[in-house]
Amino acid sequence: MQKAGPASVEFRHVTKRYGAVTAVNDISFTIEAGTLVTLLGPSGCGKTTTLRMIAGLEMASEGQIFIGGKDVTRLSAADRDVSMVFQSYALFPHMSVLENVAYGPTVKGLPKAQAHEMAREKLAVVGMKGFEERFPSELSGGQQQRVAVARALVLEPQVLLFDEPLSNLDAKLRRRMREEIRDLQRKLNLTVAYVTHDQEEALAVSDKIIVMSNAVIAQEGEPRALYEEPANTFVADFIGDANLVEAEILSVNDGRAAVKLGPVRLDLPARGLLPGKAQVAIRPESLSFAEASGANLLPGAVRKCAYLGNHLDLEIATDVGEFYVTRYGTREIMPEGEKVWLAFADFGVTLVPGK
Image (cartoon, rainbow, N blue to C red; front, side, top):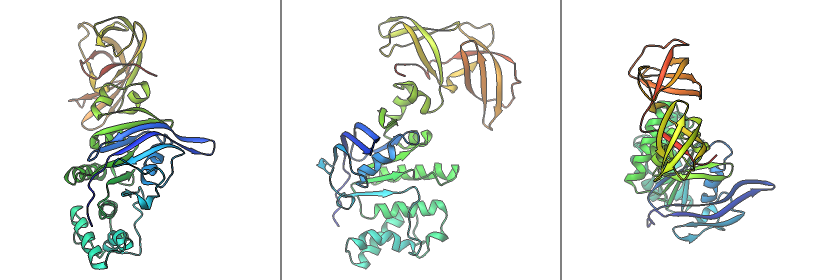
């Protein structure tokens, strides 16, 4: 079989309706060839429907879908050079690992010996050499996941799709598997569209993240840009943890805003905002505790303090709202009601343009 190589994916004003319900509403985006792009969002936002439209398992109601520059909008799943790894892995229980992975090439009409050779090669790529004769019921969740990836890879598709592939695994295994998927994507130069609702997973594996909310794209960009410069309060709150508080922009000069947050004055990028009421997103790790005698501090009191091994999680009540603070480097539990003074770092504090 001739490998076609990775292909780009492009959506142009794509809408998907189920009767009166609009699952995806007029979205446009591009996944560059050889990159891993994550569709991220809460349940019901439209991300899995979008993935299934790439696969051809759902047909767009409006708009166009291109794979490798070719219009595939009306092509069936069988006519698209795309493979999908499902959340449930969807392995055939009555087939051995080798037979599961060889199934695709066999259905395509390749001789059994060639199909098995291709399957063995891909099982070796995902670290499952030696497991060929086992059955899915004899494998752990992580091993089943690897077999599902090998089965998707065996036909060397132009685009590889993952639908919540790690949601059935425990936390430690999830971390290891996401690193393996990312390494595999880079090593084999794959085009990958990856669906998850796990923000940390998305930040860890993606070249680009497309955040979806209520059937539309809320923001897209590189992980760092989304975390540090959220386009609206939904993205600020959904990507990682953020304290969203009301503030006032006193003045704007040369793209910088003088911001009043209670007794604290902040100098922040204006991000197109004008003087007046505004919202500030403050990351928990950008807040620290200071001596009461320092300048430009926000006084507060401890409401809750939880010990989480390598850090403390605290809720701090202040006159401008409650703050969630992450504190590393100490194991001492702070008692409820203890007075504190919050200092703001020069990172992780940003004005949020939209609601």
